[in-house]
Length: 284
Image (cartoon, rainbow, N blue to C red; front, side, top):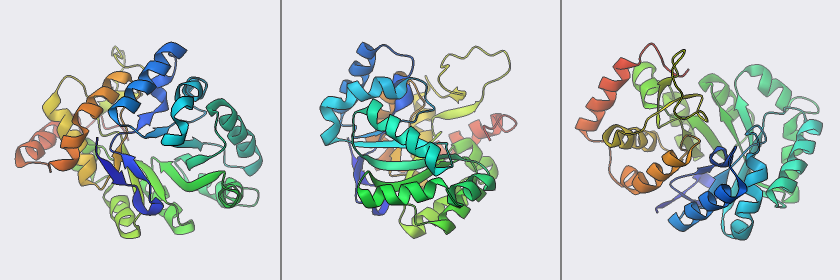
């Protein structure tokens, strides 16, 4: 598997992320097996959050034998320092670690999130101190709003950004163009999520992959690889699959191709054609 520099963090990360949701609602035996499989395939970046059900509980024991050889990222939706401290301590306990290689403000969606995070008693006070103490090596954020993401970058020198780089959104609306350019200029590490996603679930539609809140791509190799390449085209250092083992395996199988081969004209045409079909069902 290819390894890429995650912006100015200096971390050399696998081109695919193991998202903790893969282990959510699984037995410990299966969680152990999924993590071991990813390690064997060369994955060295693992990402989880307290909001992912029992994912931390499952990932901690599964990752313990490999912890010193991998990067572990965690995140929180709590915006106040005191609550975030309690949650971080619990994450340390469940994940059996004494530090996080990356810690992220999770799911920034509105200006209020930033106002609280950077205000008196906000989580940024905790994270800056945690970095000074070595409990957190690098600070980043995830966001579902381009405007909020850009404002966040104006408030602090974040080192990573976890952001949806979805082909259908980008082609139809230009989604992600501004943040991708700002990330490139600042030398920030981009972790691209929602690349293997087609559209929203339709009302009453059977959810073949219930861990994903939107419909993932699967069963169409040509389109799926083109979708991964789109994330790379936007500047991703690594790609985050939807939260099920099938998509993780697909990304591991095709990551090298996605990073080494640029989008062809045929693939661009396919993405544009498919994007037109879901124009009224975009995920954001």
